[in-house]
Length: 101
Image (cartoon, rainbow, N blue to C red; front, top):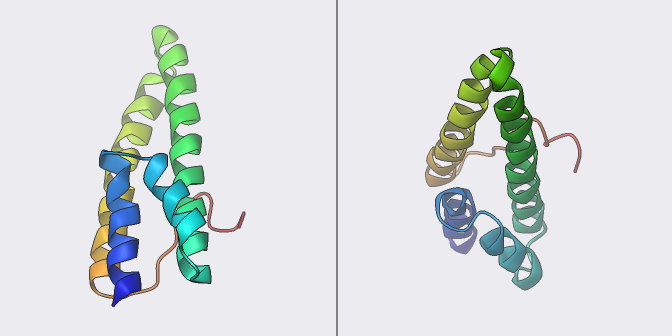
């Protein structure tokens, strides 16, 4: 039960503390699954920030605008999917970074 709420908090941290909460859970938690999820959440946020930054830079020539919209939507939708999966105790990993860790 403790891991369920830890997972929910890690996913929800994308909306209020996307860096601090995953780092704290990585340091504090003894559970290997929570450590992996916290690293995935942190890495996902960094990757999305880079992609949004590049898309925002390229949007001045209208190439990056569709990518900017998609990446911004992913930054919101993916953590919500993670929260829903954590509430139902279903295994789930962040896209883009799940094979890195």
